[in-house]
Length: 102
Image (cartoon, rainbow, N blue to C red; front, side, top):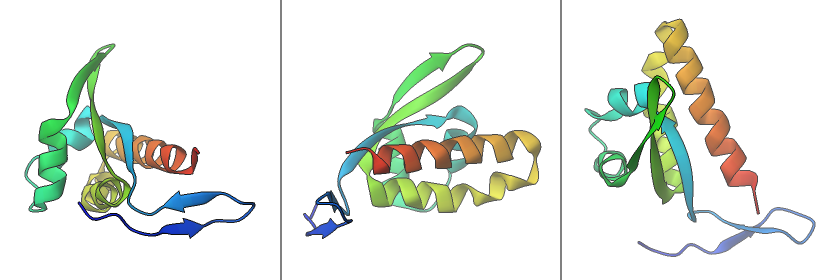
């Protein structure tokens, strides 16, 4: 994995474009992404840890931010059902939240 140069985001904070972050991917999104053609996404999901949450499950994935963004793009097909929209929104919110934390 190559290390990218840091990017200044203002007020003295620096964010590395490809730093690894841990995000809990909803089970519905993980199932949808299991057959995606992107090898990095599939490998990140395979390396993730399954976590039981109430009646459902999540997969805790530690991967570079670019892989999480690719997951969001690939899971756009879930937007056709209410449950899919919620799972996609939750995943997007978690990635956004994790990427803005210092």
